[in-house]
Image (cartoon, rainbow over all chains, first blue to last red; front, side):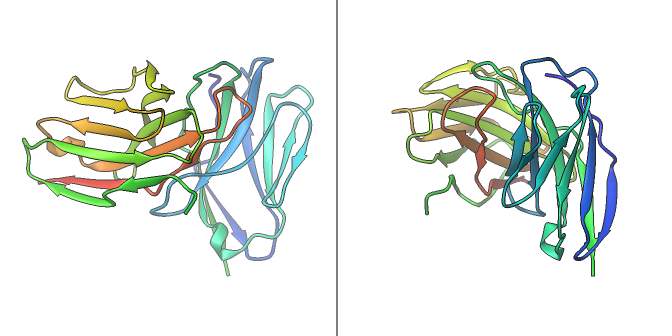
Length: 111
Length: 115
């Protein structure tokens, strides 16, 4: 699986948009970009995934650059409950592919 | 509930004892994963099941660790002769099928403390 690079930490004001970047310059054509988050003392939670088109669901939006070498997870109106470690993962589209978690970004939403 | 269930939620054991950790995946999910997370560290992959077979057990740290899955459902992770470095949160996840287009659902984990 391709390696990802994320900033170790970010801060965001409550109610503002949180934009979390991820670099995956070695991504291959059949790899999807996945985002998970882990709130303190809980198991990781799936947020969103995409291949090359931008995606949106009830939790977030995922913007993938045209060359697919980077992406941004957008939480449009961050709340205090969004404080968590956010993991960007690229995953090979083959059976049995594991999720390889990196260090992630610690997002702190401030009141 | 309908989520991934792990038991026990907490386990304290003496060094050298064996422990068994249980995972009940979401009904119908064919893929099952075990991870562990040491204090302040990232998630470390241990083993993956597709049905009852384990095509990827490359993450098991030593031969003291083993896992099985029966009936394509419940999985048990066994740690023999526990050591203090085994202390961690052990997380289980299940997925409807393999492939890069499905998400994994995680349980709340079992916090193992070896004293």
